Amino acid sequence: MLDMSTWEVEKLDVTKDLRLDPKNVRLGLTLHTDPPQADIIQDLFQHEGALDIAKSIMTVGYLTHERPVVLRENDQWVVVEGNRRTAALKALLNPYLVPAAQPRLAELVEATELPTSYKTIECLVAPDRDSANQLIATLHTSNPRKPWGPLRQAEFFAAQVAAGKSVELLIQEYPGIPVADFIKTADMHRLLQNANYQDEELARYARRRNFPISTFERLYENPEFLKFARISVDDKTGRVSLNAKQDDFDRVAEKIVRDIKRKRINTRVLNAPADDTYKQYLTELSSIKVTAGKATEVAEMPEVALPEPKPRKPTTLDVSGLHAPAKFPAIGSILDELSSLRYREFPNATFDLIRTFLEKSVKAYADGKGESIPKKGQYVYLDSALEWLQADVTAADKKSLVQVIKKLRQNERLNVYAYGVTADYLNAANHNHQIFIEKEDVLKLWESIINLLRYVLREPMT
Image 1: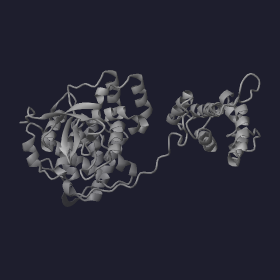
Image 2: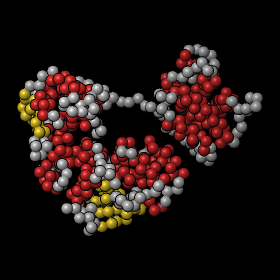
Image 3: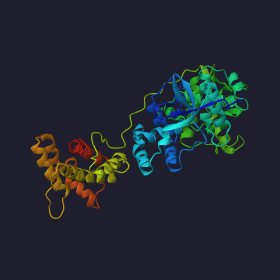
Image 4: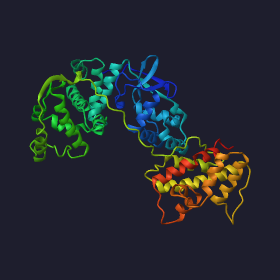
């Protein structure tokens, strides 16, 4: 029985004292990794909804009825329960910890001043890791209020087995919790993870932390499937063994994972073995011949290394080297929007905003120097701003930038590329109802003018 009555309470500094737990099962990392704190907080924001908690804190307040649970390890305070809340507080105190969410975090803090009391919070001190694990298991595997998903629950116990504990000991330590079932779920997932796939995308899908294991569970809970696939399960411990040739099982795994990914099968299609849809799918699987092989327990299987993922194309523009002038906050707001816009999805909006950003940045630059751009008619238009800037960079002997501006100001349709990065085309895209911008147009324009913008906004204006 877990007795928390003797656990002490410590008041700890969120920024200086508290460290997020690298062994947090939410991260899906092996116990042999020690990820940087920055990586942990990024993961919790990207995958575990820490931003929603930050929003709740700034809207409702930091609720103290559940204190984070900490553990003293290696002379450091490690948060073993409450990592998302702690990450949210850390990010609110320093929004730059999460670059992707920084604008939203800064907006939250600006809208509602962060109370100074959030810098130091009360934490419950667990006497050791085993006691902390018992609490975590109770909260997330048997408490219906906020349970982990099936794989999260399974990973909790699988991680302890990987650290050296026997399943039998875990069953003793966690009475009332179906430990063997969780071990079986983790082993079954690993069977799919370690299969050799012809399709790299399927391999990555099978290894996802949120893989829909419930669909596969409808198959492996059926003795008929286990017999066909030559999989055996220890009734007492839940440990899984594969008794088939690996090549044969690979084909079975590839079909199952592909069909799950394509949503051809789900828990409704495989609702019950007696259903026609279930029988039909099992017949399809049975057409794959699975021959007997050396029995191998999943725990003994080496992990298959996945090929490095293909580099993803950037979805937003590179705004490095551009400084928002404090004297002109509107420029900073536009820069924030521009840095967040996914130009591949919104090329027209991005292209139009680049035009606005270019013109306003040049005007801010002139204003910051205490100079006025001559008007053409009643207003200072984009071409007027570029004409003034051309004279300015010429006087500064910036020949390469002069050429960029000349290219912007020339209106001859020399070729598609050249005209696509001219001020005339920028104006046409803004006003001509027959022009539609493609993502390639955005990138060509941005690459053409980025160094000019870096010159104009090379340092904050005071």
